[in-house]
Length: 275
View 1 (cartoon, rainbow, N blue to C red):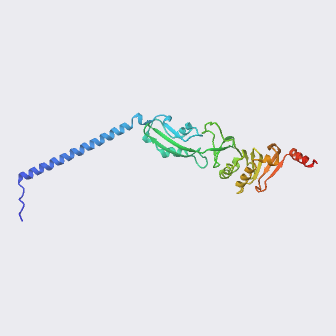
View 2 (view 1 turned 90 degrees about the horizontal axis):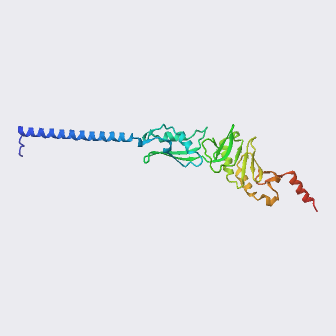
View 3 (view 1 turned 90 degrees about the vertical axis):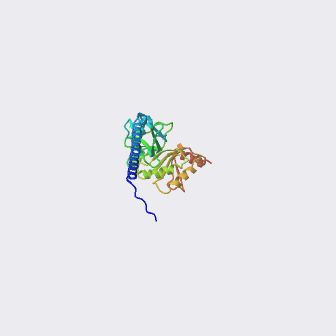
């Protein structure tokens, strides 16, 4: 086996020079890369701080899905201080600001907030609590959704039509109880103008057929509404008008009863007595 010759002094010097050049080259390459990266980062930060990356006015907040609630009210609830850089917007914080609490429900049932880069702004996609009735809480008349929640009228704009159903005695019962009743009433084919649930447990409906007694709320409620729907042609069967009816009693939905006014009752007795 041949022995390798030891390098001479000149070869050692050349090798050292080569290593120094390689180290110097790597140093400058790293320095230029670092300088380039820092410059690019500085330019990016400077660019993001320019006015065209800022939200400067509420009109840059786009509200989608608001049919009942005033978009201006939604924008006013957002904790934003203008001008604000788009990257400072925290969607989760804005979403929480629009959702109410169990004791004070918001007219917004759910919300999703997104940043928008071109053009710069924020998109607020909402799903509203739709009013299905009106009711008084204290001295203020407001709206009630299908879950039985009372909603302040302030956030709402004025659409072409509002629910005409009025709930009397809203404060006397829980939202869950009202929700059970309201879901059943949505199946009614008879126009219901008001629900009177003020005194005790008895429920009275003010309808186009007259007053309807339901009694206490119970699992018979769907059957009671079904029976009421079957009575929509009541005039054909009893030859009477709503003015002749004192009330319709559906506390026993399988055996509904009518109470007529004294005048209507006398007219029928007179017809029966005629030969």
